[in-house]
Length: 254
Image (cartoon, rainbow, N blue to C red; front, side, top):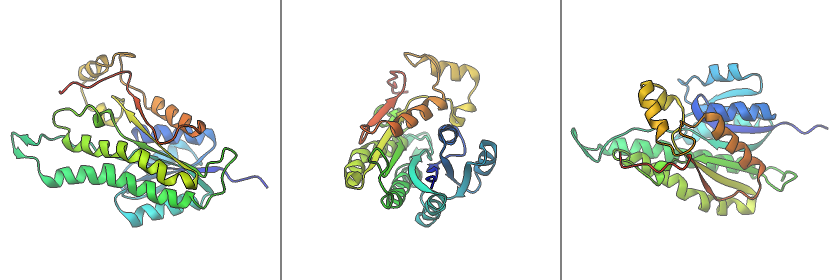
């Protein structure tokens, strides 16, 4: 009997880095389930990417919704891969022209970027733990998304940098926790990438951001992020690591 196609769950898969990952994994032969908000373009994305790609609406911070999405993915075969790309970047100085940064704004960014990442990680890992190990000995692999802001947080990025720093710090502990279950955890910390977050900027501003990258002096392509995710899946010795993907960029304070 032919084994079922491996299944990948991609949180934040409707656009940007997540869409690029979903596209690459579908071409690789995975069945892909996009976990994204009901109001996102994930349904349209799934239709565009073809019959291997499906949509499971969920808010990453909601345990019941994420469990339903994990169940939907596991119901399509063996859930071997989970990729966390969902996140927000809400700027705000601690003390700005409008006063002190609202605690709720800080809390929301951390809740989505860090707590949401952990929510997907823990529930995907629980499903993967029931798998038989594959030919390389893995039951599954989970890839999370941090940011170089975790290390080079700029002015106005207190919430974002803290949330992404949390994802970076989670990586090794999670990998050690899950090692006995043969589940790997790796995090990618991208620099400046050409995603919808930057798409609304004037072309001159986009060019200026790209020029700040030492080499190559341009914005990263989402496909380059997806290529690294694919390499993580193939390279079994990558575990518990945070990989900067930034063209040697180190962010200035502003």
